[in-house]
Length: 627
Ligand code: ADP
Ligand code: MG
Image (tube, rainbow, N blue to C red; front, side, top):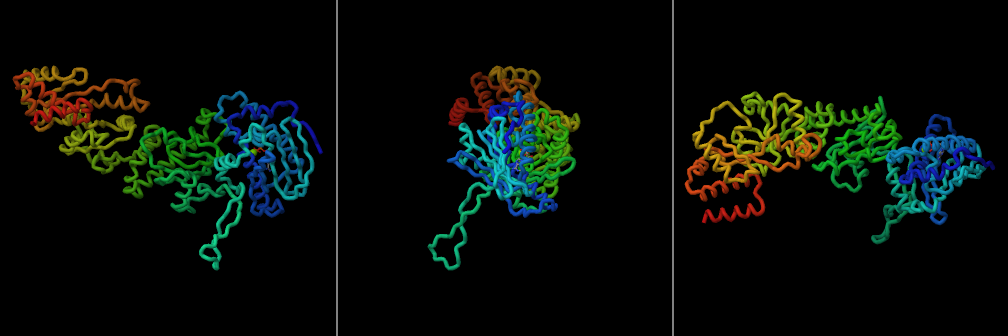
C-alpha cells in the first residue's frame, strides 16, 4: 500500500472546493457520469481499432444509493485504470486541473459560469467526506483501490475487483444527505443525463409481459424486473435529418417537454461540422404576444451532456423564444457571458443559427405558402423581432415576412407595394400604408378607408410600432399611418380641391362655439372640409405621438417617458356635414351644447373611448331624446 500527499502546497483545497461552489453542488453527479461515459466510449474506440482485445459487450453505467451506509455508488464497465494511471490521472492531472480551476475562479463573482465548467472528478468532494475509487483496467494489471478523506493524504492499494471498469464510492457528508434520496438523484439524472450516449441504470422497474396463449381471462399478466434505464442514448438531434420522419421530431419534442401538450409548428434541424461543430433541433412553438415568458426553453448540451438552459449570447436574442436543443463542443463554457459574445466562434455559431432559421422559413414560405400563411400569426412575433434586431435576418425575412390585411389576405412587402401603389400614393409621391391594430375598435375608420378602395393592414403585435419605424427607414418614400390618425382624405392627400359649404367667417364662429363646448385639455378642434356624407365629428390621434408612446411603452426606441404623457386627441369637425351646419345655426345655447356633446360622445363611442359613467349618461340622454 502507498500513502502520500496529493500536493502539500494546497493543504486546504477540499474545504475550498466545498465552500466555493456552494450553489452548484449537484453538478458532481454530472461530472462523475461524464467520466464514466468517457471511460466507456474510450474502450469502445480501443476495441473498434483492435487496440483492446476484450469484448465491448453492452456496457451500462449504474448509479446506486446505499442509504444505510450513507453511500452513493457510480459504476462503469469502461476502460478502467491501473494503479499507475490512478496516480497519474487522479493524483496529478485531475488534481492540478481542479487546483487551476479554483485558482482561476476563487474570486469570481460570476457564479453563473461556474456550474458550466466542470471541476471534474474532484467535484465529488463537494458532497462527500470520503471518496473511494475501485478500478480495474482493461489490461491485465491488478485492480487498484484509492481512498481519500478530503485531506491531502490518500491511500492507494491493490484490490481484488475482477471485472473491468471503475466504481466510485462517495461517502456522503452529513450536510449533503439530500443526495441519498432517490427522488433527488432521479431529478439530477433526468436534468443532466437524459440524452447521454451510454445507458444509465438507476434501479429496476417492473415490466408487464404479454399473457401466454393459454392464460385464463382473469389471470394477472406476468411481470418481470428489468433495468431502469433513465436515458435515451440516441436522441433525434444526433441522427441525420434524412433518417428522421416528421413523427420522430414530434416525439422528440414530447420527450424534451413532457408537460407540453401543444405540438410544435415546425422544426429546424441544425447540423454543421465545419468551421465549428454544432448539432441540434429548434422548434417553433405557438407563440403568444408576451415575449418575456417564453424565453429560456432552449437547452444547451455538450456531447449529449446537459449544460444549461440559458443560451443567451449563443443564440441570437430573438430566437430565444424558440424551443429545442443545441449541442456543441465548440462553445466555451468556462468564460463569462460578455466574453462569450466577443468570441469569434460563438459569433459564427450565432450567425449560422440565424441563417438556418431564415432559410428554413423561406423554404416553408416558398414550398407551401398557404400553410405558412396559416401559421403566420403564431410565428410572426419571432420574425418581426428578428427583423428589428438582426440586420442580416431583416434582409432575408423581407422576402417572406407577411403583412395581412383586415380581410385576411397576406402580402409580402413587395406584393403590397405593387397592389396599392396606384391608389395609395399621395400628391407628394409618398406611398401611404394604412393599418389598424384592432379591427373592432377602429371599425368605422376602416370602413371609410375601404370605401375609397384602400387596403388596410392588420398589424397587432406589440412591437409593431418599432417594426414600421424600421420599415420606414429601410424602404424609400413610404409611411405607415393608422386608420384613425386623421380623416382619411388627410391621410392620403390627393390633389383634388374640396369646396367648403361654409364661409371663412362661419368657420371661425363654428370653431369658437365647439371649442367652448368641449374639454380643452383633451381635444384640439380641427375643422376639415370633407365629403358631406362623411361623419360630422371624428376623433383622431396623430400617428407620430401615438407611435412614440407605444414605442416607449414596449421599450427601446421612442422617447423616454412618453408613455406617461396624457392622451391627446384631435376632434375633427366636418364642415360640409349637414349636422354641423345645424349646430352652427342653432339659436338656443342649451340646444346647441346638447348637439355638440351628443356628437362628441358618438365620435368617442366609435373610437371605443366612451366608458363608465360617461357612457351611462350618454345612454340615458339618448333614451330621453328618442322618447
Ligand atoms: P477530465 O474528465 O476533464 O479529464 P476529471 O477530473 O473528470 O477530468 O478526470 C480526470 C481523469 O481521471 C480522466 O481524464 C480519466 O483519465 C480519469 N478518470 C476519471 N474517472 C474515470 C473512470 N470512471 N474511468 C476511467 N478513468 C477515469
Ligand atoms: Mg471529467
